[in-house]
Amino acid sequence: MKELYLVIAYDTPSDSRRAKLAKLLKGFGERRQYSVFEARLTREQWAHLKGRLEQFVDQKEDVLAVYFLPPETVGRTYRIGHEALKRLEDPDFV
Image (cartoon, rainbow, N blue to C red):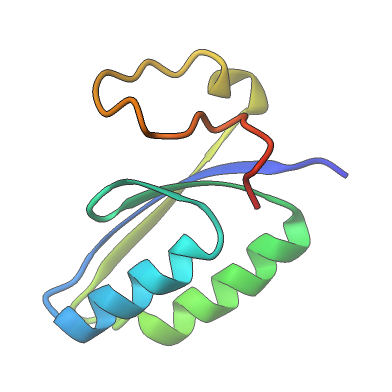
């Protein structure tokens, strides 16, 4: 089954929605910055996550963007900083 590689970024003025989004996304991927997550998901996992995201996001106040990356770009990702971050291709991902 082909995996999807995603970068998910969000912004909301609501502390409670921000906390809910972070908790939800931690279950699907790795936090890269305060409101940015990376994930490697099956199409079924993405469908489930998409439905959950649509429940949390207030379309009048919030912004959420999901970027779908081709698998070959994962190995070409350039990162500087916090060495404790896991690499996206590491096997302990969802």
